[in-house]
Image (cartoon, rainbow, N blue to C red; front, side):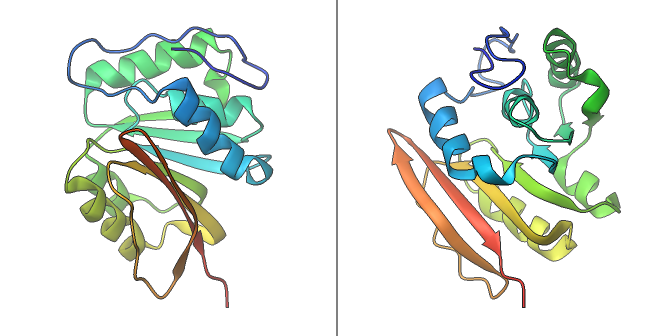
Length: 179
């Protein structure tokens, strides 16, 4: 696993072995960032269910200003810190060991881009509802979701910009509707 583009291109990233994480493949990651690359420069990013931190670090490497990484595993947050150091991006990172819902309920910050890559299953819907209810997305912001299903979101404040399938994974980009 590596950072595939930007200032930290080629940096090899550590990951947690076993079933704790499901790293995003380079093909899916490249497609995901092709969908949002114009929105990355200067953005404040939240990487929920961060795992090894590869998605948030990729976003920083491609021009994001700052990223907050949240994972409930201290083993994962240790790996995120290690990977951020390897990529020389640590000074632009905040790493939190917390359950996603607890983090969001205490969050007083707004993010331009929220990356959701929860374990496959029903958690994606609960996580999206929690994010929608918390009002932590900046005006005009977006949510990028990796899931195992084609998400059809029926929400008054969001529209699906793009949804694409890559093998078992679906990438869905939701834009906040600004009135």
